[in-house]
Image (cartoon, rainbow, N blue to C red; front, top):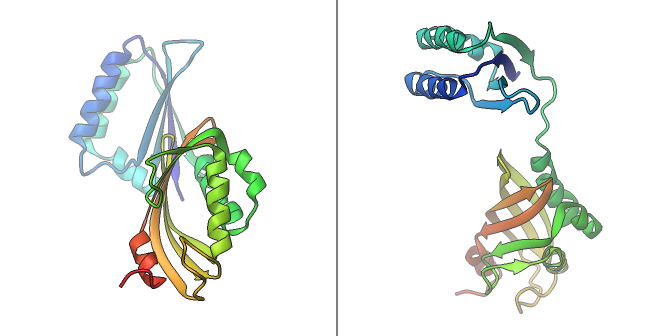
Length: 231
């Protein structure tokens, strides 16, 4: 079970605190068990900061706290704070990455499920698309996605297996495996009934919860070979 520690403190010397955290990261390189750290500043009180540190488990967090470097850094941290920091230990009971969920929704509900109406709920109107199968480097507009999904669905009966997904900042990267049966004309190739398989990666960049830009990389050459278009 993931574990999160919340550190709440006040300081007038955040630049010094920032340098201290950089030094702690450097000193514990290869030993530190934290996987994610985020620091926020109170908009109503510029001296009030909250740090959220994520660990794979409580046990891993305890290993981190027992490092001699951690104890030394803590003592220096207290010296920079206006009073003693407070610590809250939390077992994570629900973890939702909303952008990642939207990306999964696209593959399952729109691409495979055919719910084209949901595109307007997920993509901004001036969405920018980068697709290795297209002559233009960039095409613009959510209608691009609607047209692409329609074309693929007309040509194939297919499924997506989402093998891996990584969300960082505004970007969601999805590694997928696509399996389809060729039922309609595709790129000028008449239906072959051939079952095809390819892997690919899609990067979606989000803004305010909507997909703003997308990059598609997949084994187009392998697909065409499976369809008999290449010798």
